[in-house]
Length: 367
Image 1: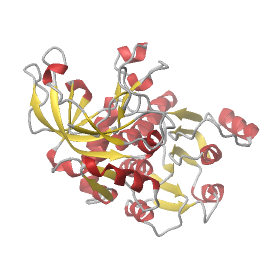
Image 2 (image 1 turned 30 degrees about the vertical axis):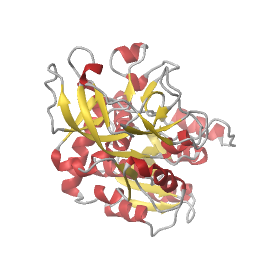
Image 3 (image 1 turned 90 degrees about the horizontal axis):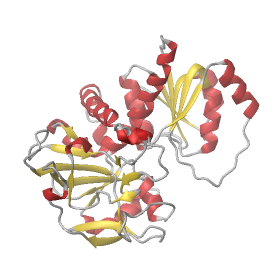
């Protein structure tokens, strides 16, 4: 079967590879689920792996199959599987257990291992292929009524984790009643974080670089949120008018925006950092002021990576609520389909050019 793969460490090495067809017998204990891929999303992570910025092939392989945003249909199940049946729509979670204490209790998203296992990213082949076989515990069922937006569940799980972790942390306060939130960045994850916060009743201000009108600004405002361009107004000017913010979800991919966000945080607020901004840059920041305000204001800054199964399931529930409250909104994110694995060069063209894309994805097979 076909798959889109790269040679890690070699820039622009994406190619069409041939893989053996997986079998239910690949999973021990009669617990295999065979899934046919229907759609696979691509994002900045895939672009960066294609550019050889990171990415690690599985042991014994010199290539890595890309794709961590999957959506598929169950084709067959082994005798020991009762959770799924053929015809079910599913999404596969991304990270798999390693050896740390957290991995052993099912919290591999919090692993302390130096080596971690993520499909399409690190030590595990991804989903830009035709079929895969998986254990039921790593699959999340998507109701038929959400099949048209199921490929968005992986980025939604990241948005859900940041918000969920903020509330988990603030249980220490006994009573936390946040009202104002800011989202830094209006890409796919920033838009989905805006959605999740609006569904929870927050007053939301979403910041981005581009001046309105854009599709992204239209999507923000369609949720009843506020869109602010950092090219039009400085962040702190906006924060003085509409902040300070009880919760800030940072997804801008800019370290400068991330640290400036710290100055816009309310007392008892939480700043959630999700951007991967590289390791080589340096930045001058008002460190004394940030430190003072965090200490005296009982503020929290937390980083998150990946998501727990619980957050994937939260995403399914929020998608159902969104379809009722903001019908058609999620579908508008699916801007740039590419039909067929053999047309994979178009995926990277659309990731690297200014084509107004919100979500680029591959239509692997008909729905």
